[in-house]
Image 1 (cartoon, helix red, strand yellow):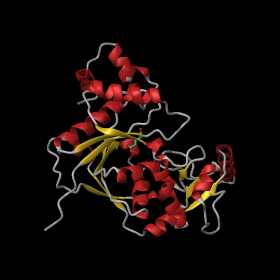
Image 2 (cartoon, rainbow, N blue to C red):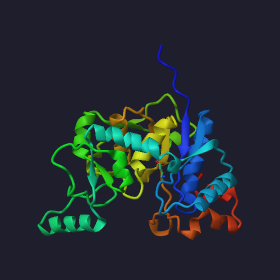
Image 3 (cartoon, rainbow, N blue to C red):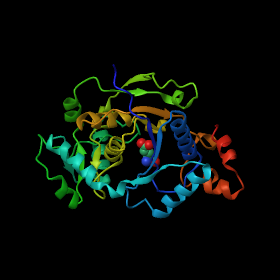
Length: 302
Ligand code: GLU
C-alpha cells in the first residue's frame, strides 16, 4: 500500500521591505484559499534577512493588511532573522562538500571584470534575471576547506561553485509544476503536474551567504520550506527560474521535494511590474481610498 500523502502545508513568505500591493494580495489570497480547499495548513513566514531593507513596521503592516483581507495564519510566524543558525548549518554542509568558496568582490569589481570581457569582444552571459553571471574572479582552482562560521563573522560572502554543485547533484533534476491550475476548484491533488527540467547552471556561481548577512534568499527559502514541511510552494511566476536553484540545494542537502505552483503576476499600467513603492496599487492606499477586501479581490482578478 502506498504511504499516505503528507498533510498539505502552504505558506506566504513576504519580505518586510515595504507595504503590500495588489500583487501580494493575489499571492496571499490564492495560497490561503488553496490551503483551505485542500484541507491544509497555512503559514506566514517573514523573510527578513536583509538588515538594510527590512523594517519591523513593515512586518506589522503586512500582518495588518493580511488580517484586513480576511487571511488567518498559524502562529508562530517564522521570522528568518531569528534562524540564521539553521542557514549556517546548511552552508557548512555545502562547504564540507567542497561546493562553496569565499568571494570578496565588490559590485564594481564584478562590473569591471564583465566590462573587460565584453570589451574583448565576447557578449558576457546573463542570468535569468538579466544580471551578468559572476565572472569567476574569486573562484579557486580546487575545493577549499572553509570555516563557514568564522567567515560569516568576518562578513565574507560565500558563493556556490555551480559547476561542481551540478556535477555533485547528478542528473535528472526536475520539479513538479502545477502553475495556475493549482488555484482552481477543479484541481486534482492526486495529479503530478508538469515535470519541469531544472537547470540551475544558467545562474552561475550564486551567492549563498552574503557579506552583510550570512545567508541569502535561495539558501534560507530552501531550508525553511523543508523545516516547515511545506508540501506545495506557492508563489509568483517571477520566481519560476529560481526554482532550479532551490531544487539543486534540496538535492545537495537531502531535503524533501515540495511541489510548485507559480501563479500569474499582476501588472500595473503599461505592463510595469508592481513595486512596493507604487502607491496606487498599495493595499494601504486602496484602503484609505475606501476600497473593501471585496474590491481588492476584484482588482486582483479573483
Ligand atoms: N520573500 C520572497 C518575496 O517576497 C518570496 C519567497 C518565495 O515565495 O519563495 O518575493
